[in-house]
Amino acid sequence: MPLAGVAVATEARRVTEPIAKSRTGSLVVLLASIVVSSLAASSAPTPLYATYASEWHFSPITTTVVFGAYAIAVLLALLIFGRVSDHTGRRPVLVTALAVQVAGMVVLATAGGVAALLLGRVLQGLATGGAMSALGAAMLDVDQRRGAVANAAAPGMGTGAGSLLSGLLVQYVAGPTHLVYLVLLVIFVLQGVGVILMRETTAPGPGLLAALKPELAVPQGARGAMLAAAPILFAVWALAGFYGSLGPALARQLSGSPSAVVGGLGFFLLAVAGSLTTILLTRTPPRTVMLIGIAVLVLAVAGTLATVEESSAAGYFVCTVVAGVGFGAGFQGGIRTVTPRAAPQQRAAVLSVLFVVCYCGMGIPSVIAGVLVVHGGGLVSAARDYAVFVILLAVAALAGLVINSRTAKASGKVTLAG
Image (cartoon, rainbow, N blue to C red; front, side, top):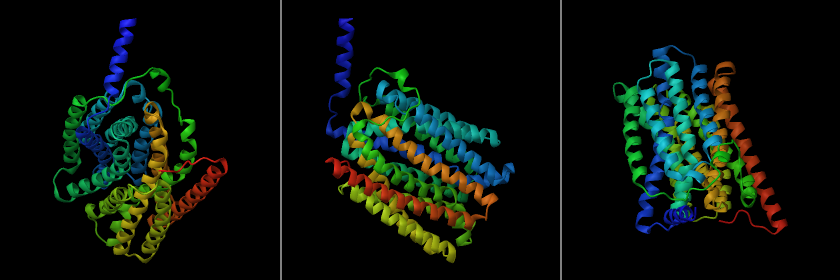
């Protein structure tokens, strides 16, 4: 027993020793690239749904069900596996998630019907949800500042890139329902090799079985920051859900073009603007960044609503870029507000809660919007209702931020300092 204890202590010291600065950058890039490819894979099917519907003869409700299945799988994985890497280390979780991603790509590349599409999306959701908190925590393990920026920039970049890449393949390449998944499969395999070769970033700890029990656990010291950030995160990801669910059809209708590239362009512009905003505001205090995000979000969504009413495609895409600024600022501000308050052994748990909020924001309104398009007043009416909903969410987020700041000042605590 004493020898075993010495061995465990030695291993714990080895994996928690500071990583050389020359290697931190490459590790953050590797981990961020997995976030990008995972979320690119999650959005890749979006421009393909029209192709699937034409080949397999299903209705828009089926598309909503497929989207909902993915979102539910992500949430379940976050709830069940979100804290696991705090106890096993990051590498085992990431290798397993990438293996499941590869299996999902195989299923989707060979899919011949709705059942296979559903299965592939569920596998994607489980892999993405299982990996997201481990990836975010590992980036923070390696470098707190660059890790926080990568956590905020990579998700939007991946989501937008996947949608545009898939749209380009649909438009210009034969067999897009196979090729996009095969490309992603190769990327996941290469990333898996990189993870196997990389050094563990945190020491394993006890409590694995308890960690598998679904729980949204936020440490006492991070709860005030979480309450301030959650409404903003929900609002900006509801915006992302708007561009992911209704955006492609709106872009094609406003432009009069059936192009899949035009359909995926809005989501891509949102993501690029969001990622650039994240980088530019790195050194701005998180509370200021969140306020910028809320203000720009309200203006951009109101402008988007006006362009839809006026049937202006150019105005729609301009407002999309502005909305991306609000998305990037709101998301980065929320992440940077909460993550510094989590100890290394709590990072994956806290990030899993943050991503649950984000995916609820993206998934729930999007599914409702899909139902409204079919059973409500149609696409424009659903887009109008969705836009108003996002504006109300942003106003609620502002109110929550003000209340939290006043409560913190009254108690003598600062919860939103960067």
